[in-house]
Image (tube, rainbow over the protein chains, first blue to last red):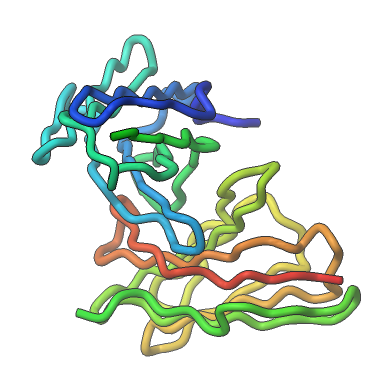
Length: 112
Length: 113
């Protein structure tokens, strides 16, 4: 059963605008959430994470928001750049953090 | 620091054969995890090792096994290969006792014919 869901397989955004990628989860025991970016033929690259005790974490152009009551998180990229075009994966882990549960990814295309 | 390295990068095997994939974690990282990525199932957790001990295992058949050496390098083995085992196998390492931020290697693309 898919415990982490990314319901939008793809997203297209114009350069300079905001990209918002969404992720929902079902397991209330998840304690830590991460976003990864993946280019073809490469492994996922860690972008940003958030602990369940926070509701927001920022790192440069990337901000992750967590709404625990809705079991929902989102990644905001502002401003979007063509180099951001990639597949973005949302992942979640329990308190021990041994295993990451991944969503199926959202393919982001940023057009000039 | 060098990143996570995986060898080989590409592999073609025949049904029924077995295969061993290798992973060298980032220096100082003691936790190594393995994932399988397929178009249909996405990224799925296989198992995680820390200090040569398997701490957690995903929902995969016993044909999938792994081990970790004292230098933290890890190998995974798949026996009696099936066509459905064709996938990208990713190794990830992390620096402390919890997984949290895991850093991935480039993967090994396994094709079973």
